[in-house]
Structure formats: structure tokens, C-alpha cells
Image (cartoon, rainbow, N blue to C red; front, side):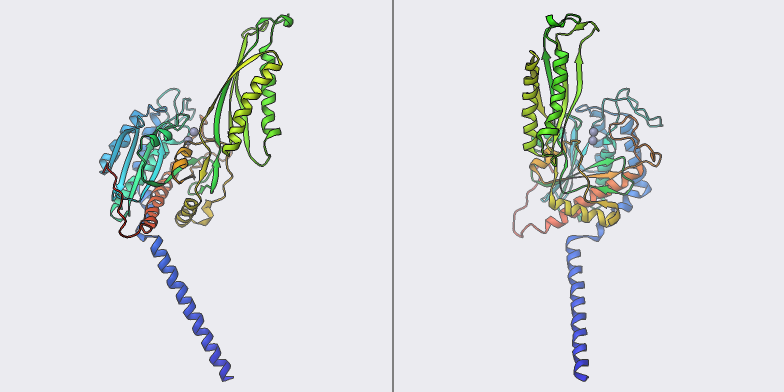
Length: 446
Ligand SMILES: [Zn+2]
Ligand SMILES: [Zn+2]
């Protein structure tokens, strides 16, 4: 009995030692990848001083929407806010773009991106801060993106002494079809940047919630237009004409079969014909018809296959009806593919800030496209969605690009704090990766 008692004491001793070890290891691990001074970012962002300032900026930009590469006043507003905060920046980059810098000026460099452009559409929401420019509207939330990045800048500037590297603020023009991201890259402004984060508002996601995933999250997009030419004539004497309306109709039906018959059903793709113009009178067969549309895929291989087959089908099917066709196919944006390591980093930061129930890390990909993908082709990048659901929108939730889109501004502090925390913690983690004695890169603009 006494020997069994001794054995038990021995066992308990080892269990206690084991628990103490685990506790110590966890403490060391968390202190080496985290900094408690970065834990209050959401509180700062929600403080009336920062929150009211952000709302004011967002409403100003919302009232004065500017289209791709014309974001001159938005750019000026950004620069004046950066000036007030004492943040240095580069301008102009890609016409209206602004690149700001916060931190040591030395590597590592991490970038945060916000797009600035609005859409050519009329706002239908009646509210105090409705767009003051007829036919232009911030219907994709880029007004909120700019605001949240300025919010992040304010938080990071307050903690500049603790930042272990440099945060590069990317205010980018022309996301809506203009490929502003590509122009920013071509300017060389992101040299030495080792990671880039971007966020997009999600009108159907509640406040304080985020979603994203590792790997492909948005599709690659392309566009095409075609002119199908026949021979016009009297609608009652079709034997004397070559009818391009019938040829174009068959072209459209055949194009629908590319996805349904030639693509792997498990590899999502889209071909949509969104334009069809032909004819001007009920009794005249027109000379020609023009059509246009978009195609989407998640892999380069599928994208190129679609691109090639769209051209073949239009020309071939037009030929069946004795028509000629010319086709113009243009690649748009590559697929948006999230980096796996940055996904882990995002989940860790977001769970810590918002709680595990507010972070969906297995979002279902969507077939929309984003020019953020251009950054990801050269820099590991990560895009996530941020909840801005409006309480008024319980039954009908207007989507992005809807004239009825109205975001809930209570989402702004979350975006600002997440941006700031993603960058600050990334630098902290990667600053430790730089071996002692290795010469650090210095940004020549600082
Ligand atoms: Zn958009
Ligand atoms: Zn957008």
C-alpha cells in the first residue's frame, strides 16, 4: 500500500510539472507572436473620436462619388487626412492613387489596400447623404473601404513606436473595370512588400462578422464582343437575305453549351451574354447584329479554354448560317486566390478580435471578380469580406452594385481595427524572421 501511495505521489508530481511546462510554453508562444498593446484596436476604432471622424469622411466621399481614374477629390481628401495625421505618402501613383507609410521605414513591409472609385449609376436610396452627382454612386462600398483604411492609419499612427517594420497604405484607383491595381504594381510602389491585405464590404453579413477562405475565393473574368454580319433585306422575303438575327440567336444557344457540356461540373464557370443589339424595324432584316458578354472561371486553364472556345463557337456557328463574325475577347481580372499562410494569420487575428463564432473561414467562393488578384499574382495576398448588414434590410438585402445599397456604418470600426491588427501583428511576426545581422531594406521615399 505504501509503495502504491509513493507511486501515486510520483505520478501527481509529473502531472503538475507537465501542466506547468505547457503553461510556460503557451505563455512564451503567445508573447512571441502577439503584442498586448495591439489588443485595443477595436476599442480605439469604436471610440466616439475615431468613429465620428470616420462617419464624417465616409459620408463626404459618398456624397461626391468619382469614377475610375477620376478620383481627384477623393484623393485630395485622403492626402489632407494623412497630412493632418503626419503620415508621409507618395502621390500621384497610377493617376489618383496615394501610397502612405507608417512605421520604421525599414523591412518588413506589409500593405493594406482600399479602392476609391464609384460606379456610373443613379443612387435610389433617399437619405441625407445621398450622392450629389447624378448618375454616379458608391454602390460597391469603396467609400467605406477608403474610410476604414484611413481609420486603420489613425490607429497605427498612434502605435507607430511599437510597429516592427512598415505599413504601406494603398489607396488605389479604378477597381471597377479599370484595373487600377495593375497600374499601382507597374509604378513599382509596392517593391519589397511581402504581404498585402484587402477587405470588401458584404451587405448580407451582420456587423462584427467576417468571412473568407484559403485558396480561390473569386473568379477570373473576361469579356467579349462580336459582330455577326449577314445581308439585310425585306423581312417578308428571307430568301433574298442572310439573317444575322437567327445566326446570333443560335450563337447564343451554342455558347450556353460550353459550360454545360464541355466544363467539368465540379469546376465552376460562367458564360453570360449580356448584350444583343440588332435591327430597327419590324419588317427589315438587319445587316448585322452585335452581342457581348462576360465569362468567368477559377483556374487559368479553364479561363483560357473558355476564351478560345467562345471565339471558335461564334465564328463557327455564324458560318452555319452563312454569316461572318468578328470577335474581340479581352481578359479582365485573374482569379482571386488567397494565400494559405495569410489565411491562418487572418483567422487568428479575427478570432481574437471578434470571437470564433463571428469568423467564417470556409466561405463559399463567388463568381464575381476583383482586381486585388493582380497584387496576388506577385505578392502573397489575402482578401476578406466584412459585415455591414443594415438592420432595415431584413427581408430584401440590396446587393453590391444595387442602386438601393445602404451600408450600416457601425461596420466601419471593425474594418479599421482588423486592417490595423492584421498589419501590426504581421510585422511583429515577420520581424522575428529576419536573421540578426541581415541588412534591412529602407524605403527610399521615407
Ligand atoms: Zn464593384
Ligand atoms: Zn468593390
